[in-house]
Length: 274
Length: 218
Image (cartoon, rainbow over all chains, first blue to last red; front, top):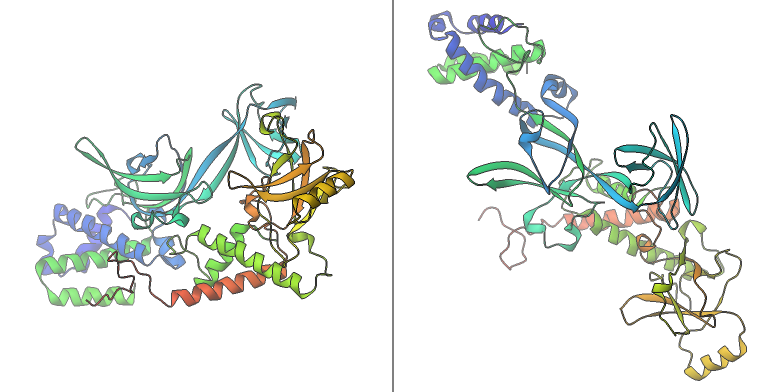
């Protein structure tokens, strides 16, 4: 369905007597208002697979962002942030500048010497930008396999990711509510910069990166746009969602013109085809 | 067997009706602390039933520690190794299983607690090998004191610790929590029931110094 086809559908659903009021400009405004509200309402009921399927283009999963401050401005995400699903924080723990011996040629095997280490098989080790997976350990050494050779003298880090939970301001005093790398916390708050108000995700303790799942705002990108004159196929929403959206648009319109009968009919349509 | 985090989430899943969300009023470290204490009391109760029973190796943790010269007090005849606190099994036994050489084949003799200074002196005269005891030090931490060998630097300890996460080489995120399956079940059920009892009472979220359940209708 294109935006223009959606416009025709919308006109058919509204009494012909009103058709004169639904010019393309007005239709665009009704569609914009309604799609925000419908997406929010569907988000609230995001339990069944049906809702996930309908909102698939707005559900952003596993977006990884580097963090260089104790906060992350949400404008830095790929899409416009609306609601948070999940945040995981990745931390690099310094193991030291360890003695190492590298052999092989893609994959490379490196044996690090470290007395009293707590590295386990399956851990991820990072040396500058090269990462490797631990394949064996002894009491004083651990071995990693990496696609590229590790730097011969740089510091070695243990990379671990932990799911974060919300931090509540009125519970910060609670000793069990203290953030640690094993229990990282996040808090959404205003980061005031001069006169600007930045919606920011504060992270405790500061990670090196976050992996975030969130609900994004409907966008006007190609395939998403709902202009009544648009000739491009709307691919970001399912046909089922678009028909529901048309019914919801009629509801929005009927409220504007105060037509109880049209509103009642639209409500009945939505009830039959939720 | 399970990691500490998996046990925490079993409990959260129990009290959440099979579902866990981000926004629980119970912080994970709070539940972790309850797991440690439940483990200690269950171990103590099990041992009291019969001290002749062997302690399940799944509950025992081992760590070796090597002191650097900078960690040794110069001129002192006693060598001190930091050691987390151990479980008290009854009024005569605590949770130490092995304290000795790092080859795990040479345990050292322990000085019985509450020895008088004279008795200790007598023991030092008679005993040829290394002896040790366990006590708090000036910094409030607990140490294993090694006597009769000021050059001793490497020690292996196996014990039932009060808080398994305080053992130096323990990884909370990946290592198995030192209990067996039966104990895990007991711990999960015990704490779940306790938390569910607490959840009957609504959380006091109003900062009014009354410590009463908020009445939303007022």
